[in-house]
Amino acid sequence: MTASDGFGTAAYGGAGWSPRTAEHGAEMGPIWQGGIDSEWRPLRQVLLRRPGAELAAEDVDAAQYLEPLDLGRAQAEHDALAAAYVEAGVEVLSVGDVPAPTPNRMFCADTFVMTPQGAILARPASTVRAGEEVAVAAALAAARVPILRTLTGGATFEGADLIWVDARTCLIGLGLRTNAEAARQIAQTLAEIGIEAIPVDMPFGTMHLMGMLRMLDADLAIAWPRRTPHRAVTLLRERGHTVAFLPDADEVQANRGLNVVALGPRRVLMPAGNDAMRAFYEGLGVEVVETPCFELRKAAGAVGCLTGVVARDMG
Ligand SMILES: NC(=[NH2+])NCCC[C@H](N)C(=O)O
Image (tube, rainbow, N blue to C red; front, side, top):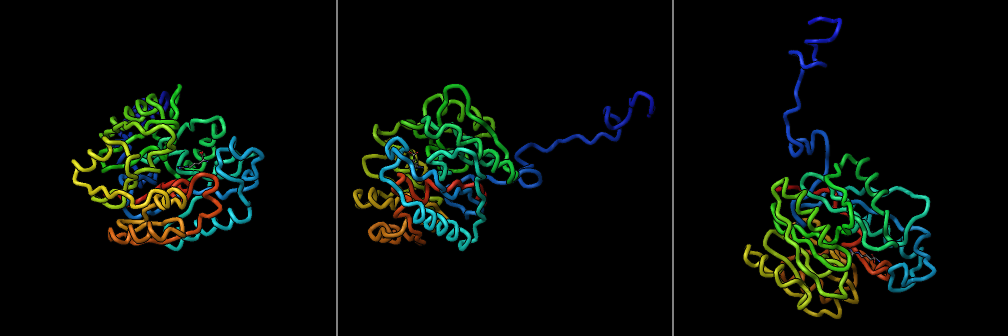
């Protein structure tokens, strides 16, 4: 080793050089954290955003709400949602403050989706939600979650349009919020880590794939009759999943009983006040924990939409 020009030192590839040979996937844990490879394994960490004054939108329809919301009630329900996660042993992360918050930033499921090796940042489809992903990226980075991909070009994608079928397969719902270019970019990125992304078309007048299909266990999916893409149902059946169709679509629609998050296998956190749905879940051997969403759902979402899932146990 000569000290003069550094040749032979570790910095210049000398004997003391210690090469990084582990692949990114193996560094999930030691360096990075977070990740999911299912919709139903035990839930460990979620990202939430408590709503603030942005809920008082002047034009409710333009804000993509269904009805005006009462801020105090919405905040109390959101606090109860966070408390329900803590009660279930799930760590709650929060999206930070921004100078001019957009009306739907509390819907964290839409602004990213997790993979086994990091997050894919969404690119929301309307101008009303454009840029929500910036504060979410900051929150994920602060929590040591890698950003596997940021969608670019003309892609639009919302996280609630991607559903894990098994550790090597996900479905992407194409429709109002997610376009073919987004599916192409996501499929390309996931192919690099051995995962197949299968696009499925959704009916006109629907919002997200999450709103018609949920996976509650290794072998159990629940689906909305006549709304769930044909290919989604046949693929799930081919792979040995039972697809249970919802009983009473009107009640589900009104009360958002499908808008659940699995806390673990056959265990869901569901918007309160859905007795028919509760009975339906329990009939499938699914345990139900309830949290109120009576005010929050006026913004056109509930438990599933409000929850950005960051980490679950992986298979
Ligand atoms: N994952 C969901 N279903 N999110 C609901 C989002 C509702 C919100 N008002 C929007 O239009 O974007």
